[in-house]
Length: 266
Image (cartoon, rainbow, N blue to C red):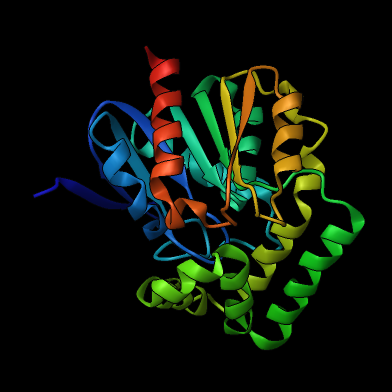
């Protein structure tokens, strides 16, 4: 039986598995820490893996309004302090990727390596307008109204058809979001890449940037631009996958992440 530790610290619910160098996993908008269930088995044999619910998600408390990226960065700092972690590796998915960039810029001494998964960077006006239209939908009709279109963007048609239980699980996560808080955090996701795009060249730790070849909103071009801006970074594009490639084909992501960590920590 796996040894899983659970806890809550100053409003943040977290879990921990495995032993070794600490790795913190930061999930994306509208889901929760359970999204990492497809990664834990690959990471926990060699690392102490900590995964937690962002403010306004899962079992964690809601953020203050207006939502700011700094609140989520502070949440991560508070969690690290509560777990007595001086330094760790950070893996951020989507909104989580933006949060860990902000954290690495503000607390470089606490981050030894970064992995940015399916993360937006420097959206064009038309790209931002498209995301903001979904924010408006969430404001007017609630989280559930965004679920089906999200699943279409996140997964290939073939995978969705063959895995209805996974679709139901993720659909339920989206629908469980607070109808008032969710659009506020969605707006943050839509806008906060703009404030980071010119500063990420100050990130100095080894960084792996990955996305799916068919992730239109967090495109290969965005990942390649980030890898070009961050001095010690490289990009890897995974063929045939959309936004939730780390669920659709976990091994494609997990093997590259583990290999990258082994490189950095050897």
